[in-house]
Amino acid sequence: MGEVYGFLQYKRETAGYRQIQERLEDYKEIIYFLEENKLFTQGARCMECGIPYCHSIGCPSGNLIPEWNDYVSKGQWREAYERLEITNNFPEITGRICPALCEASCSLSINDAPVTIKQIELAIIEKAFAEDWVKAVPPQKESGKSIAIVGSGPAGLAAAQQLRRSGHTVTVFERNNEIGGILRYGIPDFKLDKGIIDRRLKILKEEGVRFETNALIGEDISADFLKRKHDIVLLTTGAHTPRSLPISGIDLDEIYYALDYLTDSNQFISGEKEAHQIISAKDKVVLVIGGGDTGSDCVGTANRQGAKKIYQFEIMPKPIEWNEPWNPQWPDWPQILRTSSSHEEGCERRWSVLTKKFMSRSVQVEEGHFCEVNWKKDSKGKMFMEEIPGTEFSLKVDMVLLATGFVHVEHSRLLEDLEIAIDQKGNIAVDETFMTNIPGVFAAGDSVKGASLVIHAIHQGREAANYINQYIQ
Ligand SMILES: Cc1cc2nc3c(=O)[nH]c(=O)nc-3n(C[C@H](O)[C@H](O)[C@H](O)COP(=O)(O)OP(=O)(O)OC[C@H]3O[C@@H](n4cnc5c(N)ncnc54)[C@H](O)[C@@H]3O)c2cc1C
Ligand code: SF4
Image (cartoon, rainbow, N blue to C red; front, top):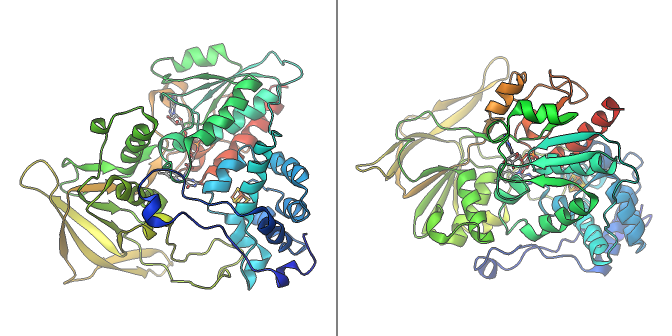
C-alpha cells in the first residue's frame, strides 16, 4: 500500500529519456532510471484501493503490483523482487518496453496520474540483478520427459524456463542465428539493449535449458522427427506473416516490410551484418505506412541512420489528443493520441490517409499517391471509410516501409506436416489448455493470439507450461 495518504503527498515522477540530440547519435537505450529515494515515494503513492485493477484487469500476467509497491516504499527490495518473480519471468524486459496496461487501469487513473508501476518494476529487477539475487533455479529432480519448443521469443523462453524448472528436458529450437524472437530481431536496441536478453539467457542455460539455433523446424528438422523424439511439442513461432497493400507499384524496389528493415538494423548493431548488407534509410526520404508501434520503431531507426525526411501515414483517424494525466476510458486502455520517443525525434505524421499506388520510371519507388478518407459507422456500428474527393496528393519518396501489421502465424511446412488446425483468423487453434488439435502438441504466444505484446506472450508461455505439466503427469 505504501503510505495511507502517499497519493496526496507525492506527485507522479518518471525518469524520462536521454536528450534527443545525444540519443540520435547512437543506438543505446534511451531510458533513464529513477533515483532510489524517488522510488520510495512513487511506491508510496499506491493507495490500497481495495480492488487492484492494475493487477486483475491491467497486467495480463497478473503481476502482484500493490505488494511490490508497498515493499519498495519501505525499501524492502528483496521482498519486492520475490513477489515480482512469481508472475513474470522477464520483468527486465517488460519494465523497459511494456506499454504499461497496468498504469491505465490503476485506480489513481480515475482522476489523477497513475503510480509509475512500470518504472518500479524495472527498478526492482535491476536492483535484484545488481545484488546478485537473480539466480538459476535448476530442478531438484529430473522428470525423464522431453519437451521441444519451436521459437525462441518471449512465449517460448517463458515456457522453457517454467518447464525446465519442473524437471523436464527442454530444447528450444530457433531458425535464426540468435535466441530472442522479436525481442532480438525486431525491437530496436534503443528500446531494449540486447545484453539484457543475453543476461537472462545465461540463467536459462545454467538451469539446463538447451538451445538449437539455425534450426528451421519443418525443413532442417522434420516435424515428424521432432514429434517422435519428444514427449511434447510446444509451438511458439510468432505471427510473422506481414500484411501487404493490394495496390499497384507495391512490388517496386525500396519498398520493404518493417520487420525486415528492423531486423537488418539490429543485425548491423550486433555485428551479424555489415553496413552494406542492410536496408538503410541514410539520406533518403522515407515513408512509413502504419501509425502503430512498429511504425514508430521504424521512425526511430531511420532517424538514427540519417534519413533526410520521414513521413508516417496512418489510414485510421487521428485519436483524440489527451493532455490530462488521468485515463478518460478507465479502466480500459484508452484510445488517445500517443507520441512515442521516436516521434519526438522527428517525423511528419498524418492520419486518415489512404495509400492508392506507388509509381516509378525505373524499378525503384519514386512517388506515392494518396488521398484523405472519412471514417463513418454503418447501421450495425461497423466502421467504414469513404475517400474525400479533391484530397488526392502525391509525395516523392526514396523508400517505403510497410508497418501495416501482421495477419497471422506463418502457414509453414511445420504446421502442414503436423496437420495443425488453424482458427478463423489464421492463427493456431488451441483449446483452453493451449493444446492444438494434435494430442501432445501445444501452442502459445503470437502464433495463437495474433500479433500482440511481450507480456501477453510471457503469460501465455507460462500458462501453456502449466497445462503441459498437468498433461504429462
Ligand atoms: C517491431 C516490433 C516492435 C514491437 N515492440 C513491442 C514493444 O515495445 N512492447 C511489446 O510489449 N511488444 C512489442 N512487440 C510485440 C512483441 O514483440 C510480440 O508480441 C512478441 O515478441 C511475441 O512473442 P512470441 O514468443 O509469441 O513470438 P516471436 O517473438 O515472434 O518469436 C517467434 C520465434 O519463432 C521463430 N520461428 C518461427 N518459425 C520457426 C520454425 N519453423 N523453426 C524454428 N523457429 C521458428 C522465429 O524466428 C522467432 O524467433 C513488437 C513487435 C514488433 C514486430
Ligand atoms: S508487465 Fe506491463 S502491464 Fe504488467 S506490471 Fe509490468 S508494465 Fe504493467
